[in-house]
Image 1 (tube, rainbow, N blue to C red):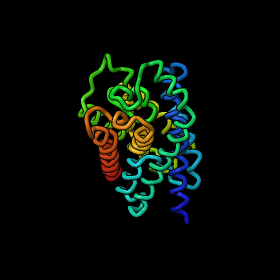
Image 2 (spheres, rainbow, N blue to C red; image 1 turned 120 degrees about the horizontal axis):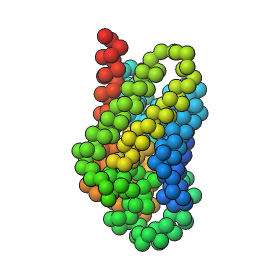
Image 3 (cartoon, rainbow, N blue to C red; image 1 turned 180 degrees about the vertical axis):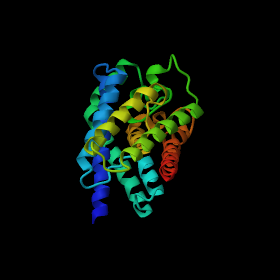
Length: 256
């Protein structure tokens, strides 16, 4: 039965993280401007609270890239990987649907004020809390980001995240109870570095779950980056590759 507790924990933790994190982006877009620092801080709090909430009965991966890396290093059974993936995605979808239900009326008012027609090409400007885009719509006038550059950025960000998680979790240490806080701060730091370029997904479930909600809520193909399938290579494949490489790097370091 414990493995089902783990799966439930992945669902609950992912839901909490996405609701708070994507909610902070929604606040910045719809209600009053938040700086990048404030959004990054909210994501740090979201990740930290999500881990603390479920770590008593779950591994608290909350990220398919972390789950894959844990399976590669035999810290998680491969048999559990599909269930973890599904729970993480389901949690992200559930949280995004709840967030959408709460803000849709104000979102429509925002679209009307900005002359955005949901589903048209430029309507992704009102869907930024439900999926990442490159470059960040707020930096379009100053940055040009190719799919390759975006993919490399997401891969490096996830590599750093997973490697540090492995190192912090390698053994019990004096401040082990603070590990969730450190992981949350790390996520915030990565967001500060990458958000202008890719909005810093570094988590395939966190990106794809909200993006699905946007797709079925009227944005359609506008919920995906302009370059067809680049959402898959940038926000799903690249983080998974980055996480896998981090697991190999960690294994190499600790075998020396």
